[in-house]
Amino acid sequence: MMVEIDAAVEYLRARISCDSGDTDVSQYTKFGIQLVYVLPFAFLYFSFLMAITILFLVLDISFTRITTYIRPVCEYFVPLLKDDAYYLTPYFTLYLYAQFAKMLSTLTMSINRYTSVNYPLLHKSLWLQHCSKAIFAILLIPILFVWPVAIAKTSFLPNKGQTIIMYEHHFAWARTSFGRILIGGSTLIFTVFSSVVTTYKLSKLGKHMRKVEISLTVATVFTSFGFALMLVVQIFQLVVPLDSFVEDPWMATFLLGATQFVNDFYMLSGPIVLIILDKKIRRSILHCSLRRTNSDKRIIEVSARAVTITETHMF
Figure (tube, one colour):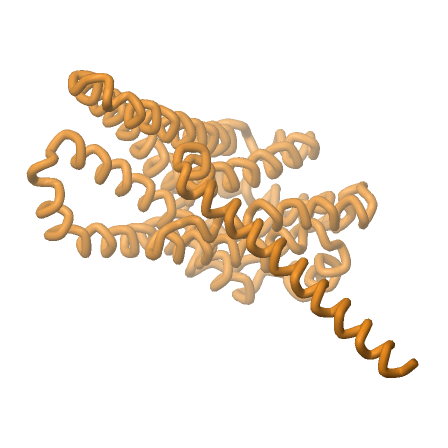
């Protein structure tokens, strides 16, 4: 395994390229479109979870995406970061740490939802007692999976315009993919299990709980789909020999694209579900949009009046 990874690194190092084959305008447009949907959804998260998600997205946008879609930025960093060094190690460690923390927070929310329906009398006291412990676990557990990156040298090796950060694998058994599979698999299994049990119990309470059942089903579909895709990508990376990526660069390009899509989906699926299910949030977003539009109109009207008065005085 270590030999395969070293071979892949040497292959990428010999073929560093910031050119994706698309025009700069096309790449800038893709980057702009992603900012349009990433940033607004990020701010729909709540307090603690919002901090984790925004941290991940800020890290993702500030380097990974911008070096993927803005070629001059990529070309600027290549000579500085292409060789093995510790320059990118703090960034990549924190990036992966935030990713793991978000996955664990999703698992925690699934547990919270499960206890609220199945243990309604104990739910509040249970979480008041253990909430701080759950947050501590969310912050601590990712360290168990990112420490191999924290002690490793990293290198920036873009391929066909796709940003790739490689780190030295000192231990074949300590790979971040194993952590993603463990946490992602646990979250997927528990989410499906808890949703089946919870939906069954809600159905026993009568038709007035139908909206809750629908909400739970939609949330489960989005969460499960996101984590299922992530697991497929991670298992694919482990099962397919790295030689295949070396011999078929398009496979590597597809995998990188799929990884980015999966990251966006399971990081932002929560706000999407909220918008779909919560009328108050939709009305609030629409109200803010209309209020801003009306405000802009008033500014234009005031500006127009000022210009008219000035011109009247001048003439």
